[in-house]
Structures are given as structure tokens and as C-alpha cells.
Image (cartoon, rainbow, N blue to C red):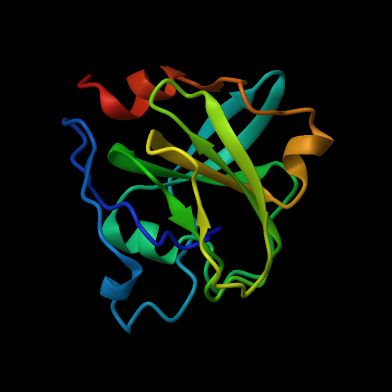
Length: 169
């Protein structure tokens, strides 16, 4: 479910280490990324009482491709993009035909902003803050349909987003 990031996140993934994504730009995306990726590893996230089965984009290819070229997303499916550091995120919809919404989330898992995105629209949606650590993409309109708003905290099955994705285990 990608809305490609103008400042895309990239992560080195080692099962025993903290995720260490490296920022990159969409201009660095290789030409071979011209097809949908298979379903990524998932984690359950909760926003209030609502549960999302969430794919996690952590490697360079996963982040750069995200939801590109996919043709469907179920109501309670999502994709979470993890960044190595807080920054001013900027997502857009290159090669994405599904209407999506995205939430810009800080290091503590608090939703800072929610935006609707238009299929195939490459106009960047730039965050108002430089504190974005995670971006959560859902089917467009999922947030208001489920009474999820800014200020709410996203939780993972292993606890906070910080504990799940940013701290050594």
C-alpha cells in the first residue's frame, strides 16, 4: 500500500538488532521496481478498539514500492512505514491505483496528521512537522469511519510502536 515517500524510509533488518532505516529519496528508486511486492510481514496494530492487520515496510525495496501496483486493499488492512529518525515525511501516490489515507505518526505512536490521497497523484503531501517516525496507510476513509483522529496513540501487539520497532529486544 504505498504512497511513495518523497523522503522514503529505508531499513536494514536484522532479527536481533534495532531497525536501522536509512532515509533516501524517490529519485533513488531503481527501475526494476515495476511490479507489486508479495505481501510483507505483518503485525497487528490497534487504534482505540479498532484492529488493523498491518504489513510492515522496513527494507529499502519494501519502502520504495509499498502499495505500488496493487489493485486491492481490504477494509482492515494497512501498511506501516518505519523511519530511523524523526523527519518531515512527504508521501504521494506514484503507481498507486487504490485510494488511500495516511497518518503521520511520531516516535511515541501518536497520530499527528491524517490525509486522504488520490490514486496516481504525484503531488507530495508534506507533513506539517519534522517529528514523523511512522506512516500508516489504510483504505481511504478508514480513519473517520472508525472514529480514529489525531492525538490517538497506535499500539502494536508487542506494546508501543517505539518498543516494537525502535528499541533493542
